[in-house]
Length: 435
Image (tube, rainbow, N blue to C red; front, top):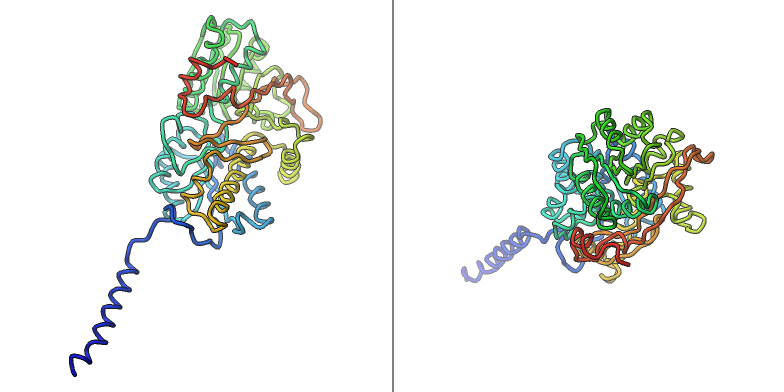
């Protein structure tokens, strides 16, 4: 009898131990490939770009566009019925500080998505950490082609054109604008972005015109902002064209100093990121500079022919009393891509909320429409888009207070990007220019 009486207590103890073991068992991470994740109360997103230092105005345009776009998405019901909760984070600081901040956002702030990163040095450092933490990370501006050519990322996606598009497009446009060019010089920041940009431009230019001579290669310290010595060397070189990938506030400083020394009347300067100067320098933008906005320009596609671009220009201008330039467009591409990626993943998942892994997989061969036009993210999670260049006009447009680009040229995406799976320099040295 006593033995029988103890049996219920023994069974109760076994059941309790079993429940405790189940509760303490390791759970699958949020990014694992289970059938679905629990639909959250909100989607937490961190937008990272420069809010201080010389690139603050550059970053502000991107973050302003991000806030505008997320607010519009939330007003329409969110992403998959989930509202987006976003925060804006300063990218300024050392690379180590940027990586530490990324870990804080993921591990302490528990964000679902990180998007942003303008600096090539920063995105090269953040990418492997994103893979380690299995956190969906969208790169909106960082341009080094090595980010995806030297890595096999699963959770990292770039939603805009990279330096190959910029530099190859610049070489094509330089020859179109100055077909008899025989000499070239260059001034670029001494870090990954500047080094990569010049290597790609020089290789593409020499592939198209093998007899071109390189007269000068200058490597000022990144973001230095004072170029007296470099300008003296550039003017002494007397090259037919000058290539530069300087960007942000120190690019504006270069333009002002070069204009004071009449550099732009002596040679054709080709600026791969110059479009932001239209906004920041306004009526003081010199005529005759060949430039792009990292392959983009607000008037291509024509707003009168493209409803998304027309609406974005109108909405952004009304909110911020200025015209959007390429950092703003890049952030919109990232956010539009994020929404498209989640919606594609949900559709494939029976309309259930997707895991991080399912969203990352949805970006494979993802195509979506943006104010820039059609964006296509490839199987390696890098993005191809067209390249647009033009030359600054002589008079400010009275509507905007700065000169628009003239003699614009559009180079299709397949003309300025290597085929998927092909190394960039192998492509330039072999089949580039053959159409």
